[in-house]
Length: 160
Image (cartoon, rainbow, N blue to C red; front, side, top):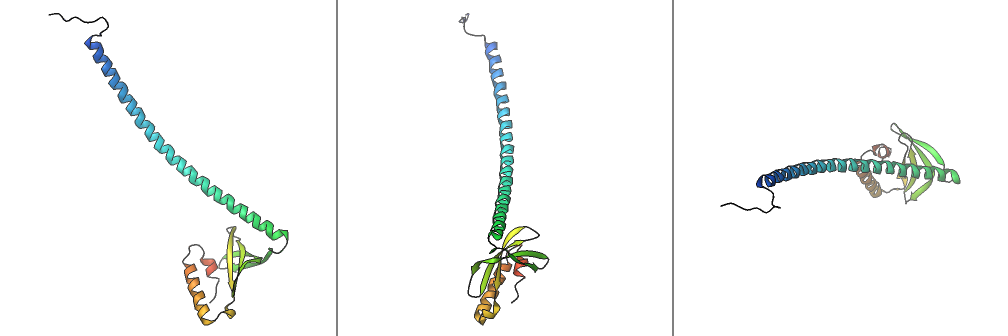
């Protein structure tokens, strides 16, 4: 028996070689895909880091713009001009004359931390205007505020 083959049918060895080449190409493709996936992960990490850096920088820009606006306001009509420099611990604060809020026994002013060049709010309480119950409430407020991080210098400026 002789098997007849069509002229267009490649011999078995050629098919075997093509299959081996195809498998090798597939492995290379898988390797390239894995490498690309690793590169993608690294790029995503870099993008995340850059986004965080951009957000930090934008926060700094917003802070500087706010401080610039605050300083411009303070110089425009004099009502927001610096009234005095307040020393609390080792820090100094420029306190603006124009209050940003008032209550029955307190006034809140804008200020700028001279060492950090940051805007702050400074609450001035008139203890003479407080009854004993209000003084206790103020002590609780101060204790709560003391739990805030990095604000102890302002809170320690209060004397109860």
